[in-house]
Image 1 (tube, rainbow, N blue to C red):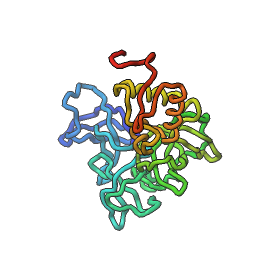
Image 2 (cartoon, rainbow, N blue to C red):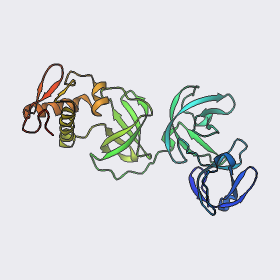
Image 3 (cartoon, one colour):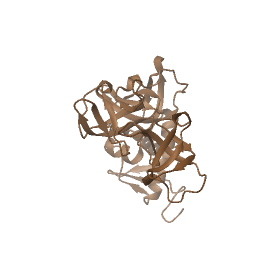
Image 4 (cartoon, helix red, strand yellow):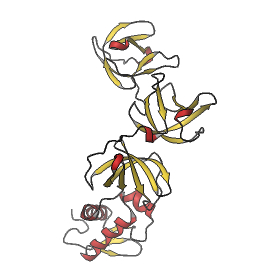
Length: 285
């Protein structure tokens, strides 16, 4: 049976003037409009399609991929606001995605970028979005280990830092990372603690050896690639360090300190240079 709001592999039942009708099982026949029919379609081929409802509430299929499916969290742009209905988001499909007023934690305006949960409306069985993320994250306590790497979607800024969606399921809290983060950004993070109710304390950097050792190798590799010198040092801005090395300034300074103590680098102010000629020298791989 086809699943609404998901990608499905469906068989072709018949062809008609509007397009192809696909076998949706208990959902009945589902139209794939002609403009979405692949040019190289073969007889008896099953089609990978996304199933949703069009503006007239009819089930339709498309070979296009939306920005998010039912069960996903994603960041989308507000296209329009209808005073009686709610806000509409650019979903990546012909039909925009509705955020009803009752599902808005704060008023949405055209041009806003917001992180939403995509789901089925219990009242209408239509696909809608919600900015009330707390309603849609898992309350189960995840089986994460301390220091485990996870996938983050930065959802909102708080006085203490940021909220993030962890692995498309849980809500995490990230203390001030040292430089501003963009709402909607996707990045790797690390688990610092797991609390009751499924809440997770996060960090953008690993701890201890897990953080410093891989970073020292990354810095050495960058030095080799750039001819033995880099314009980055412990005076570089947190934003510049995060952009180029993907870590906090604190972690970067710890890695530089270790490399300096082992006489692998020297500070040139500005920048650093590679000293360990037994490992690398110009013209030597």
